[in-house]
Length: 141
Picture 1 (cartoon, rainbow, N blue to C red):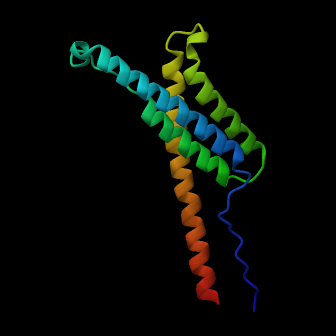
Picture 2 (cartoon, helix red, strand yellow):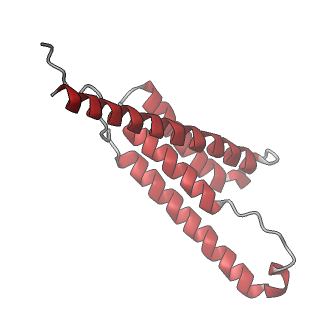
Picture 3 (cartoon, one colour):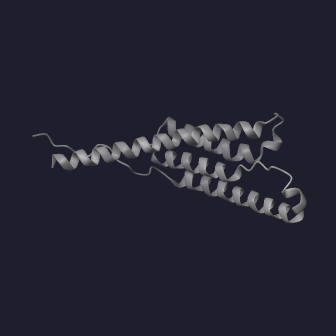
């Protein structure tokens, strides 16, 4: 009889970096939110006339998803690449005014949207693999 050991593990690998990046993005998102609320108080007549495009809330969700996926990834070159991408997304979006490329901010946002959705799918795959492994290991016992 073979000894089946749970080979798939769902654990966090060095999560401090992602937690710090997620907190930084949360601070930036809260800052943008409060600036918008101040602008709305100062310009109530313009608030109803202008259709504002707000990205700080969804950008936080995308960074959160990418950060969670980075935490679930084992230390490797992929993990370093995900960390680099996280830094580029967070700081590239908020300091995009320093880069003289038209619509650079929206390019960063679209990249974060795509990677956030991809990270969500990959997180679901990891959780599904973990659950399948857990169920099959229980059946074998």
